[in-house]
Length: 202
Image 1 (tube, helix red, strand yellow):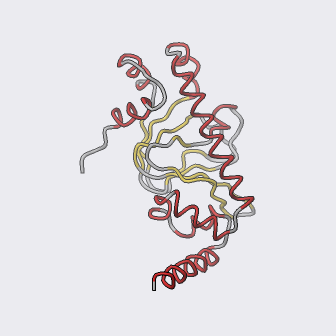
Image 2: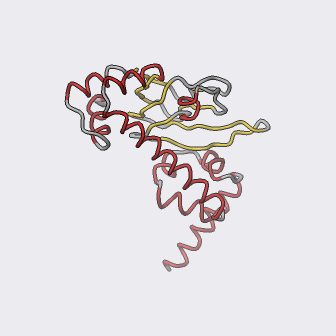
């Protein structure tokens, strides 16, 4: 399998937000740090300040909290997403979460120390940064709303309909943690849905 072209993938991603000429993009790309991480490798730990925001070129990542010894998964990230602890990255406050790899992954890291300098050198990137923060905020609000208004079955059905990569690539016990339910509850929900679909199709 040929290695992915991180340069072209990232260039296509940026083009969705702002129009940079080749020189501007090259200068921006040169500020990024490539990371190749193995499955289960941790990039951010609770108590540390997140120094990077990561663009995911290949693989799958997650962030989670540990409460009373149990993991509570907050989000999954796949190719084309920005990931990490954005609050810690921007505020310089210690992170409360862990950020690690579910699969072997390839990332491009944007270092906090370079942000303001990059914005000064390439002003158009300020718009990109603002849009990225807005997109993250909207996603967070939507997830919060669904958790307050949907039943466990509705949450799972919504996940199946809107994020098939999660269902296809994430272990069931992690999906249960993400939905805020026990693995056995998720198993019952999946069996019930499968039974209803079989009955409706007969």
